[in-house]
Amino acid sequence: MQVAQSDLRSLAVFRAVVEHRSFLGAQIALGLSQSAVSFHIKALEERFGFRLCRRGRGGFELTDRGAAVYEKSKVLFLSLNAFESDIGTLKHRITGTLRLGLVDNTITDEDLPIYKVIAALSRKAPDATVQIVIDAPEALVTELGNGGIDIAILPEVQSYQGLKFSYLRDERHSLYCATGHPLFTVPEEALSATAIGKYAFVVRLYANKRELQHFPNAVTRATASNMEAQAMFVLSGQYLGYLPDHYAHAWVKQARLRALLSSETNIPSKFVIATRLAERAPSVLDLFIQELAGIASERLHGVLARDILR
Image (cartoon, rainbow, N blue to C red; front, side, top):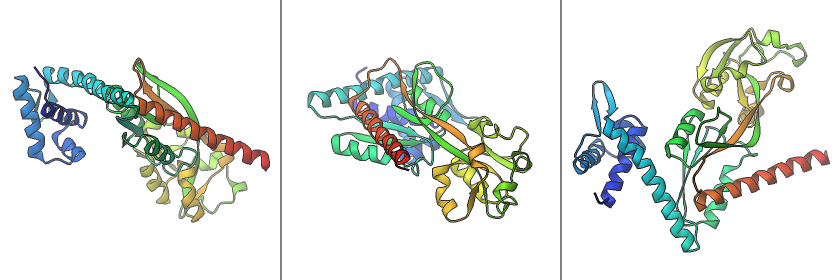
């Protein structure tokens, strides 16, 4: 079978359906109508001569052959991206698409200014394209393993076969309460870990209760799927929760949040760069990593210089 451009478009839609586990998810992600998504799936099935998936009251389900097509499509799209990068190299220009995965609310972290890396990439590789996916750490690792993204910057997770994790930096998290919480007006010298641990906490599911390491007897009354949700719980004045200091800074300045015993109970969150092993990195990915390393180094030297001059 000779692969046509229309087949590639339909395969891209099929991959979106699989990765979002529904036709509706693919519609939203791709900005297509229900009929357009159905058209692409039907066109592929007619080209291949077999069913790719089933959908009904039981939900979306891949057939065995559909699952095999999805796995083969990963290799195909990775090869196409590499080919595009290679052609750009022959033209002495960096081309291709970089698909970057990030966790939520890193935009306020001036020690990890991704926007500066994107600006440098745009100047040095104007023919390249950057796509950003914001998701939970586990979802980003899955996307990286599936070939859905090329690189992820995320909090440290367990090791996975076929992926490489390189240490980037530590992000400091402190325990916060908001106006309206009983501890908000308690003097710092009157606080203790025992007293704090008696109040309700909110934790992120993917943190595996690592947030409670200083408060082993604390009671969890709420859970959050991401940092923004956690901040909403804390800002309600009913819960205590850990937030990155850079993310909480604006609310602290507004006297809406307060860190509790930060010097004693802060938690460093180790951030890593995750990439795939056994795969030649496209030029646009190499450039992104170089720019990220350069900016991270500048930030580190700036911090050291400030510390020395103090």
